[in-house]
Image (tube, rainbow over all chains, first blue to last red; front, top):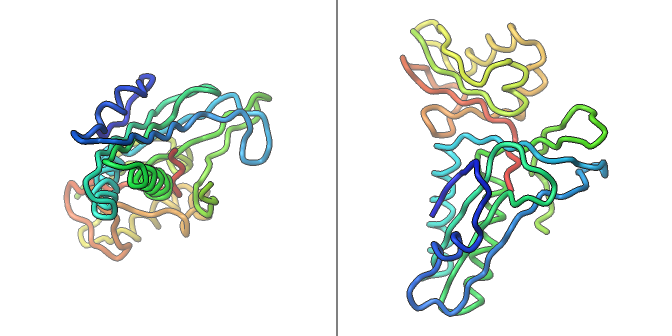
Length: 143
Length: 81
């Protein structure tokens, strides 16, 4: 499952889609809209937009790379677009594998690469009503 | 000839539209298209070094020559996740 959606993401549906026969481990990353912006200001929400054709192609490319690195894994990626409020789920990456090490590694690799490569943009919208600001992941620490 | 131009995030806001069909001279390169857009929208200038360009869904070199019906996407630094 590789998708960009307007509606809220069903985390367990993404996990199910990533589940391979013979899985002994499932690791899921859930990205949530944070209340504090990059510069410390209070955030009301985030506005996401995407170039779907390129973003989805990148999801598939990243998944191919994760499989090459970590063998027989299952992977699913779903990202939301549109305006999200603080606390809402923006992205879900789920990986399954026979053992946990590969599932953890594949999930971590996938979200890191998604953030640096996928054609998706976000704008912070502030509680105080000041103009929003586009945020780039360039140079972001992988934490 | 005409090409379709897709703009995202800050570039979209500066252009005021997410999608447009533009006339370009035969033989024009991607960088010529960007230069024309910058002339019409001076606020684009500072975004030149950070904006990548895709042609028909693939990242493209600025020297590539445009063809009829190309889909050109103007891509600021990404911020997904």
